[in-house]
Length: 73
Image 1 (cartoon, rainbow, N blue to C red):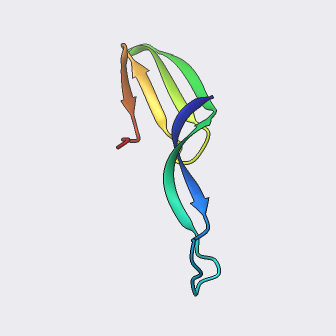
Image 2 (image 1 turned 180 degrees about the horizontal axis):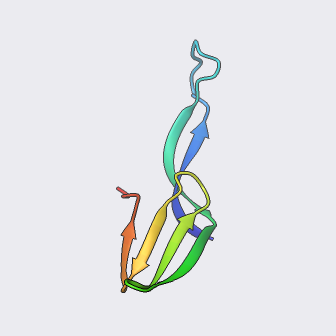
């Protein structure tokens, strides 16, 4: 289990006209990541890490450098 970006759904504090209104906020939580180890003829060995929770964060590790598909702020 590793930390990564995710979303939390909560009910509003005050009543609204829409009964289905919910609040969606960003948070960091712990969930499973899957690792794929690949040996490419041109690039050499690389590792791809894929998160199992929305927004499926994908990170590739190549020659000691990481390339992340989701920029965190």
